[in-house]
Image 1 (tube, helix red, strand yellow):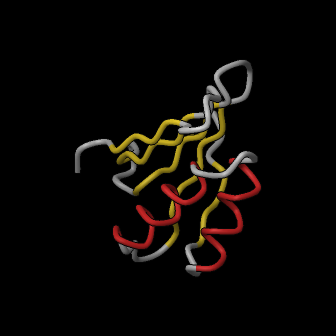
Image 2: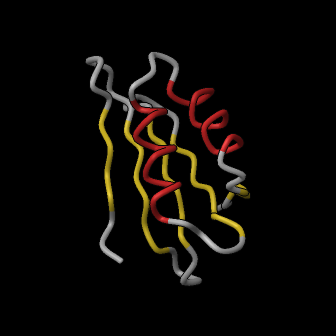
Length: 84
């Protein structure tokens, strides 16, 4: 799987990415362009179309991070934080 990236269309510095992590699981990466970077592992079977829709929709909102959580929840996509 090639990494997929999304950039804020509203002029912000927010970035969302989808990649394959070291364990082979899909990971969602959020970076606010200033100081915050968060990585989550997708738990269970991942439907790429649902993840793509969730990330794309979240990136079209002013408050990307809360929108991401909402969009993932709507699609029953489970995530867990990756540390380190």
